[in-house]
Structures are given as C-alpha cells and as structure tokens.
Length: 382
Image (cartoon, rainbow, N blue to C red; front, top):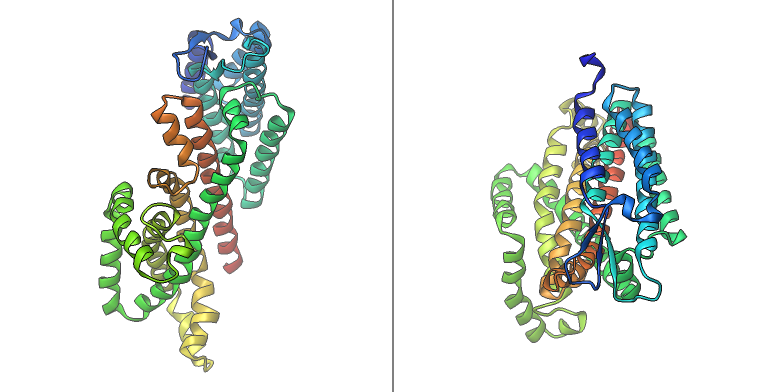
C-alpha cells in the first residue's frame, strides 16, 4: 500500500489540503494599505464554494498517488486553471459594486495551492521528459491561457489588476524600459563579450587578468554598483559634449544600463572561452589541414561548435538582467522596479505584485525559450 503513494505527491497533497481548508482564499481590504480581512473559499460565493472545494480535494487526492505523468500533469493543470478562474470570480462576488477604494487580493491559501499545483505540474513535465519543441508548445499553451483569462476580464476585480487599471500607461512605459535595460545590456554584452572571449581563448596570458577583473565586478552587490556609477555618470553627462543629450546622467537609465552591462560581461566572456576550449582539437586540425586561415577556422568551425555554450551564457545573462533590472527603480532608471519599490514604500502589496509578477514571468519565459534553443543547437551540431 505504501508503494502506491508518491513521496512528492504526499507533500503536495498535504500542503494543498492545508491551504484549502485552513488558510484564507481571499483578503478583503477597505483600501489598498489597511490590513486585509481573511475570507475562506466558502465565504466567496463566486469562487464556487463547496463544489470547488470538492473538485480541488479530488485533484489533491489524485496527486497523492503514483500515476502516469500525463495524468499528473493534466490533473494539476486543470486544477490550476480552475483555481485561477475561482480567484477572479470570488473577488468579483465579494467586491461591492461602485466601490473604487476596496481591494480584494488572493490570500495565502490561493498562493499555497497555486505553488503546490505548479510543483505537481512541473513534476509531471519532468517525468514526461519532453523535447525542446514540446516544451515550447507547453509554454505557448500557458501564455495563451493567461492571455485568455486576462482578456476575459475575470481578474479585473483583483487588487493587482485594479492597480494596473489606474496605471496602465505607466505600466507599459516602464515595461518597455525594463525590456530595453535587460535585452539592451545583453546585446551590448554579446557584441563586446564574445570578441573579448575570443581574445582570451587565443591569448592565455591575457585571460587571467581579464577574467580576474570581471570576477571582481561580479562580486560587487547590485545596489552598491548602481550607487558607485552615479558620480562618474553625472560627470560624463555634465562635461562631455552631447552626453546629456543622449540621456547620460547620474541617475536614470544610463547608470542602470552600464551596471547591467558590467554584470553581463563575465558570463559572456567565460562561456565563450569554455565553448571554444570544448571544441575537439581534431576539428580544428582538420580545418587547418584544409588550408583555412585562423579567422576562417574561428568563424566557420570554432564559433559554430561553441555556440551552444555561448547560448547558455546568453541565457544566464538574460535571466539575471531581467531580475536585476528591477533594482534600477531605486536610482530612477525606470522599469518594473518602480512599482515594486512604490508598493514597498506604501505597504501596498498589490502594487508590488504589479511589478514583480511580470518580471518573474519574463525570466521564466526567457529561461525556457533559451534552454530549448541550447538543446536544439546541440542536436544540430550532433
């Protein structure tokens, strides 16, 4: 009998059932900053009440046992979808019509159940051992589901969505800034880091000095580096002709971009060196025997074979930058961190979530896409 239970499933079921029956599903606030009044799932009529509780109980019961991975994934996915719909409908049923100050947020029960079900879905996906294309298909399905729920308006009465409704123009402006900081710094790091990596590979004596300096930069805390750049960037903006016209100043986008670029260099340079060193010597010698010059060998043999490792470096840098770009809000650099720090200052958790959830979602999406790209590139080389 004991072998019929799944070890991870026991943890998931215990956590999910505890959240369902003992933790609040929603939190009702008279305004955005006062403490919330906890509401259990059966106290929110729109959430489905006892039928929804029964369905979730059955789902956690299924996850308790050893089942086929597809059954595990399907059960967790269906329960997650139901949970997402229930929280939106529950918020709408609790909110008084015309009350523009009240805020209804997901409670700890929702977040714990969501975590447990997401863990079960991830476990099911891992056991299925999907290929890169199939994983991308799952990602597309999740994105479509989230977009459909957002477009339907089911979540419109949740506190984070109300914050978005009052700040929609600012949200899209700061999202564009966040994307510029994250992707722009990665692009600049590729342009600079790959050639520097090639030089370090070709000249081992240079490698130690370059990687040593980049390692030191990597050890500086992000907030400290942003702060250290304020004075030199302010001097450049004030004394170099045309710098201020480009937006270079002590605070703003410029120091944030430079800091993210500096953090991006070490993974790019080191992964380029590791990738080139991992190319079989036989391939390089065969190219030399065919009369290829050093530049031709690098462009046509070494770099293509090292590409999966270089792409791994790009993945590391992009995910890192999406997270670090949140800190840019502290120095006036914009990005989604603006909402995070405004929310912290005002003790308004929905405003924090408005900035944090998109950043986390972008980081996960970038990691999945680039992981698939790395695997596909390795298969292409093989």
